[in-house]
Length: 398
Image (cartoon, rainbow, N blue to C red):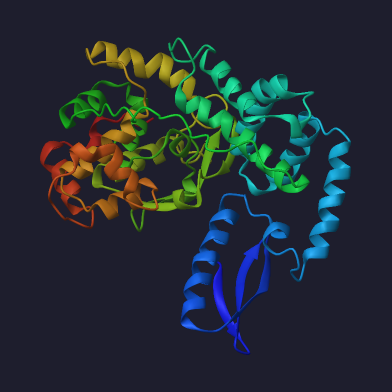
């Protein structure tokens, strides 16, 4: 934050730029009128720094670090005279940045680089890439085939690919001392998350009719709100029967056990009686044969999710004459049931692994009633009133 300070009756501009602190003399004496003028000037400097448009030499040509910036500027010009192609810089950038990211995000960025960014920009001089080039590339992406039956790539997918491009170009501009071409380019507007939760009656039907060996798995998914990767990667060491909690600490992503999606995803989920009974039954089945709660009977590793989706999930929906939807809707179902039972949005957000209630209200706004329970008891009573027979009675124990 740029600010105005006084030393020996003179006013100075105090600010941070590129991680360093600068205190430059304004030449003005410390009187109210001059303070007002310099506060506006300091705000302008702060905005330019935030927008990567601040030019130290232009603002403070005789500043304390002017000579240093002149030398760096000349060095940058010399370096830019030698062509730096996009692929070379992108690879250096990736190596420098990946230490900051979880493995799953590293893999996501790597896919964007290898499949889209490098083939398109590979041999271009990175300093020559213009705003027009960026917009043309985005147009190119918008015409690529989409996934999941979509004719073209979704705005969300395009935004995910454009993000590392923005980071690479901004870093190159910052490092070599030129203006980034990424100016006033906004992310594409994404469609609102499609929520297709099941009703409690439908949940009951599905749990009663699914194969016995999958009842605990589906019960846990419907009544904890865990993400697919979290429930598939759940280990017995993270199931605390004494405190009736599930500790979400890891996830199974792309064939690897990794930390959770975000730091906020690390959480403790309160077990309802139904989940407690389901996991108790599952413990008898797999507690001595695998570290994973829901495991493959052949390997003992995590449950084969593709196999579950293809052979169990979609056939189950078809038999029950329910609209086909992804298993991730079990997570949405949990959230809407918690809201319908009157639980506190703050409590629900914590259980879901959100750091704030912002996403909760944005995604589930039409399911939020004017009620204020806070501890999970309302949801417990709702389940108890609808599930008279213990879930464990419907679960086959080997």
